[in-house]
Image (cartoon, rainbow, N blue to C red; front, side, top):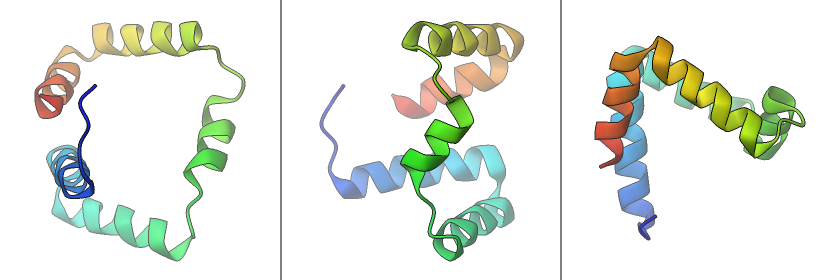
Length: 79
């Protein structure tokens, strides 16, 4: 993984959101995070529970198989 500065992370994150959600939904997502004082760590624990790395990897691989276009798009935006 390469070391990105804050501006690069923000740019990639916004690009990902815009490509996958569109402008209106991206703005809605950001407003919810700001308004709700979003705690990513708490959300991650609630969303993924006690899943192991292997379980998460298997779920991601299954998703990629079921959604090849979305997966390819995600890979390209990370490059």
